Amino acid sequence: MSEEKIYGLFPEIEPNKEYQLPCGGLHNIYVEESGNPNGQPVIFLHGGPGGGCGSKQRRFFNPKHYRIILFDQRGCGKSTPLGETKENTTEDLVSDIETIRKHLNIEKWILFGGSWGSSLALAYGIKYPECLIGLILRGVFLSREKELDWFLKDVDQFFPENHELLLSHKDNINKDNLVKEYTDLVFGSNFDIAKKAAVAWNSFEGSILKLLPASNLNDNNEDINYESELARAKVQLHYINNLCFIDGDDILKKIRVLENIPVEIVQGRYDMVCPPKTAYEVKQQLPHSELIIIPDAGHSASEDGTLSALICATEKFKSLS
Image: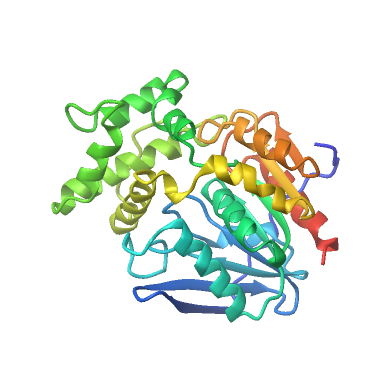
């Protein structure tokens, strides 16, 4: 990282506005605005699929400069219906982002997306390049079969005990039927069985996010919000079963439409969820982009080097219009 200054999160702030925006015939999307109401607009695209936004994500952006927009994707967080997978595809989410832009009367904005959020940012950017000021991407993911195979199967080469916990949740789960078995469990009618499977599914990703993961794989379950855990797992499995409704190789071909759009890519060298090769391939297709490899980081946005590089990118983008 060429910048010598070390950046940290901005102070905590509260939203200026919060509302539900109807999208399609079924979903209501939670949207919030914070920071400078007249500032440079930036929208945060959360990961998952199936994650959600939180107060920490407002803090990537200087609130004096940015008009900060967060939203929970269909079926996620404070959007309703929670956990709904009908009318829930990448095309729907891209349409929702555009609906938000038009609702807020924004001409152009910055998209900030990590992991699944990077996929969504690129999908939106390809369709609406004229609406972009720039892109900030972290832990790039294109949902190609080889990427999903790494996350669901091959990562056991580095985290065998974590992966074994995922497989041992129920008898006869193996690498080949992993997604099907968890889909059946999570979408089953028995809530007690479904919630336990959802926690096991979600915990696996959480256990491999950082370069130095927590050593305790059996966390205390007392404070778990099981409805949120179940919704997250349902949405993620719905997307994984459909390769996230995107063609990653096609995206790599089409992103050249972004050749005049500033793009910052931040990638952990030891990212076990979304390995660096995909970020490198995006860089190859967009030679003007800046790829920053953090040498001592995994997938999480909260690791020191990654966090500093992301906030450095938002500070750099303050000069764009």
